[in-house]
Length: 304
Image (cartoon, rainbow, N blue to C red; front, top):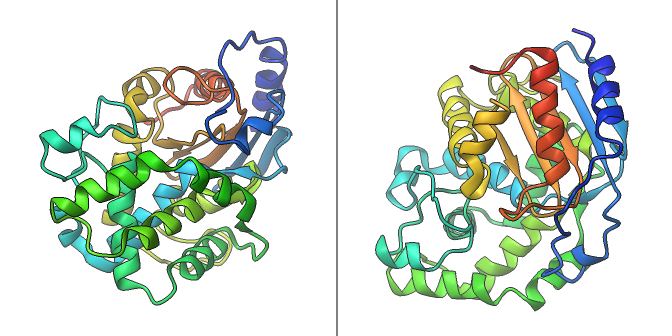
């Protein structure tokens, strides 16, 4: 498969795409991002690469980080994790408070904000230095020691993060948060501030496309069973309340973030990341969704 030829076609086809969405302006630092940014990078299991555009420029990965923290929590707690967070699609906005009320403080899945905050609580409880250990994990699976947090972005998120504080306080009132609220929310803001490029994200997510092994080193980190479950959650819950649409149009497990990034994997084939900060009404990258739909259409390959 000539993926570079396919990506060249995607770039050309979307060059004049009329995007009607908006940059995530509710986070002050994200509001400053040039809406014209657009890049894509595909990393194959044969270690071949294909890319175009702003694929090496770092951006805030935001909720894509939730896949990394979930992976760490699963390794720490195993099946006990599911006593504190469910595995069902939400059908509601990613920061919904009403859903928590209906379900007595148990988040619907680990990829909505409430679920990710419970995961943050678990990591705070079980790790000596959660920020450092998350960073070490991401650097390890991407084989890149230059990945880091964006401190300015983390502070920007904290300045407007009142709804996340509300989510944590409500779950603490219902017994599903064990640690200090400030500590949990601080860790959550930092995980969302991770700055990575499409190239770096596609490398990091190869562990999910490669049956739990780091492609560059061959080291096996996770069982096939754990990887299968994470990929299943990405398929059903990875795009807020637009996961069904993504499955319908693209047909790959993936995760999006309001920084405009999307990562998707084709098991045993490739990992691909795309970045465009223009978001649709559901909070997903408008151009990113279109690019990935074209990828599976032009290649004729999806998981279905």
